[in-house]
Image (tube, rainbow, N blue to C red; front, side):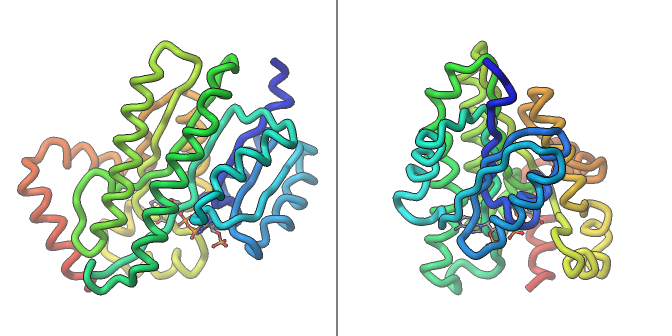
Length: 263
Ligand SMILES: NC(=O)c1ccc[n+]([C@@H]2O[C@H](COP(=O)([O-])OP(=O)(O)OC[C@H]3O[C@@H](n4cnc5c(N)ncnc54)[C@H](OP(=O)(O)O)[C@@H]3O)[C@@H](O)[C@H]2O)c1
């Protein structure tokens, strides 16, 4: 199989970590199939990236929370003969606040995007991936996947879903040509405004926050090395290991304290 004809699918590629992943893949001369919301500047970004290394960049503007959107993404790849050998499920939304105060539409969007779109895209492409010499699935989760987080209860739960789905699928596919990785960043300064505000945040937030370009590089390196769990940054890795060693009840108490301050 000619790897030059293969494509890396990235969802939520117009901004933040997804855009940084698209840039990182462009630097590595990968052909890309980028997906993001309509009017997100995706076409301009695709044209810009295509000029850098001459790799082919295809894009599709679509709202992934629509019922038939994951199937449309798959159909676009098939119709245009794009051989997808890497799937990066990055598109996701967050939120902060008590569960009872969330709007129904926000709750629905988070489940449809963070869970449903990721699951169905993986599902639709899986049998095609099995036919390739090697294929990768990279799911962008969060540090929030490791602990239940009050006032981010749904978000953290969707990211735990991504963690467990990825780990189980990776085990299910052991010995095949497909590896599944999940990425668990803590804070990511996706734009200069966030970067500035994170500098004013707590010491823990300051030392664990990375730029989106750093996260993208670590994520792609980890995926290529078939790492199943990718925790970007030494400080975040430190807190991950501490979290594993402490009794669960103590971790929950610390998390409750940290997040009650952010109200
Ligand atoms: N930033 C962090 O601190 C952080 C930390 C841990 C994990 N993460 C995870 O990393 C991923 C990316 O986060 P981010 O901070 O980079 O987010 P972001 O800056 O808000 O970018 C999200 C991307 O997804 C697209 N998108 C949003 N809703 C969509 C929909 N319904 N259909 C299709 N595309 C949609 C956005 O398009 P538009 O440009 O049109 O909005 C954008 O390209 C998420 O899964 C997030 O949970 C982020």
